[in-house]
Image (cartoon, rainbow, N blue to C red):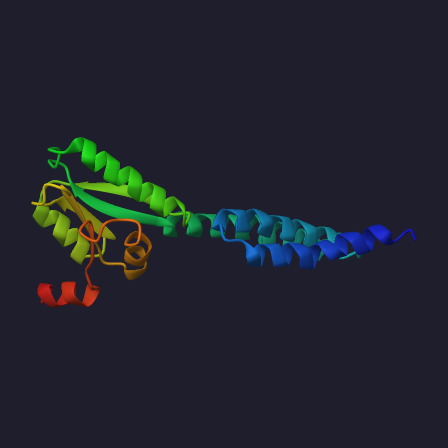
Length: 180
């Protein structure tokens, strides 16, 4: 009867592991992964393996969470290139950017705008894979801006939410063929 707390704490290991796997938001998964590591360290300490508990606390929890956090933070962003001088329809541009942010937030992605001096450097950045897409002025008066992306998954996420005349998918192999 005195060992009931051992069973309760040990039961937290598979529970927190399942919760980690089932998370949709990567940041929530990181937090629960930290809890999993802390519970594992506690279990090791309760069973007398202080060295393993310390290793789990330092490497399995603190270091792993820090590295995972950096990886998630840097990979969950859409870098969208724009030309600095495109300011004719500033209000429509802000609406489009806010709409894109709303769409991407549903998938826990951030939108980062990268400014370029002219259209040539913008296209070169897209070819060199420094940005994931471009947003430029179009000739259509109804839709003054047009977005192009080279990432098919981003295109699949954004297309159902935007008018088809606002976004285009540009196959990376087509970009490289034009470059050659």
